[in-house]
Length: 317
Image (tube, rainbow, N blue to C red; front, side, top):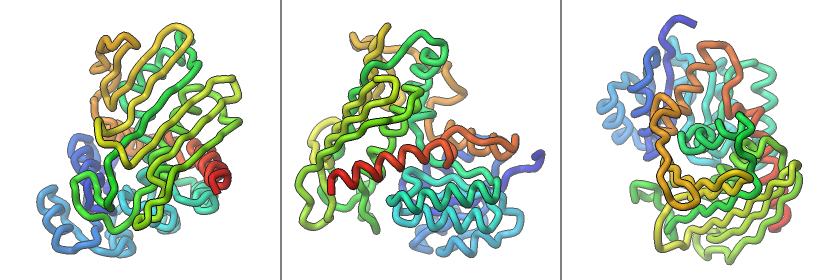
C-alpha cells in the first residue's frame, strides 16, 4: 500500500485528541474526518488539527471518499457496535480500550474481523509503552521471567469526569476498562494464558452505579501470578504503577518511566522511535495496514483478556 492512509477519528474528547497529535507525527497518514458529539466543539478541534470534514454521526464519515481506516475513541458502550459498523463498511479499525463491555460483543467483532480480513486492533497501550517494551525484550531474550506482577490502578473520580476535568456522557468502569490493561499485559508479558482468576469489589456508588474499588488475582498457566488493586477513591498519586518481580530482577514501571527495584531509573529512550505509547500504538496500526499483516494487540490477540473479564464479572455477581 503506497498511497497515504486516510483515517477518520470518532471521538473528539481528551483521548481522541491524543490520537490526532500522534497522527501528525506519522508519515503517510492523514486525518480527513472527525466525528464528535458536539458539532461546534468538533469543528474547533478539526480546525486546530487541519481536518477537513466534521460530523456528529460515524455513518457520515464512513462515506467520505478515499477513507481507509477509523480510530474509535468514543464511549466504551459504543465500541463494539461502531467497530462492527466500520468493518462492514470495509474500513480498517482501531478501537480504544476496551473492545467491549460484554464478551458476546467482543466475540462478534472478532468474528467480523475474520470474515472481512481487515485490520482490527484494540488500544491496549501497555503493550507499546517503552517501559513495558524494555521488560518484554528481556523476556524474549530469556533473560527475565515473571514470578509476580503487583499492579495498582488508582484515580480520584467520584463524579463522572474525564481526564480534562470535563463532564462525561458515559460512565467509566474499573473492570471492563482499567483492569483490561493489566489482565492483557500480564498474559502478554508472562507469555502464558491466564488459567485462574478471582475478584472482589467494594461498595456500589449510589449515583454512578459502579464499584469504586476492586481487587483482582490472576494466575498464568506457567505459574506466574498477578495482584491488581483498582480504585476511583484514591486521593494521592494517580495512574497505574506496575511492579514486575522476576527471577533475575525487579522492575517498576510508572507510565513511560522504568526503574529497578531499588528505584534506580533505567533509560528507555532508545527502546522505540518515540516515548509516546499512543503514537507507537498508532504506528503499529498503520504499519499493519500498509504491510497487510495482523497487528500487535489485534482483536484476536486480546480476546482472551475479555473472556477473563467476563468470568470475573460473573464471580463478582
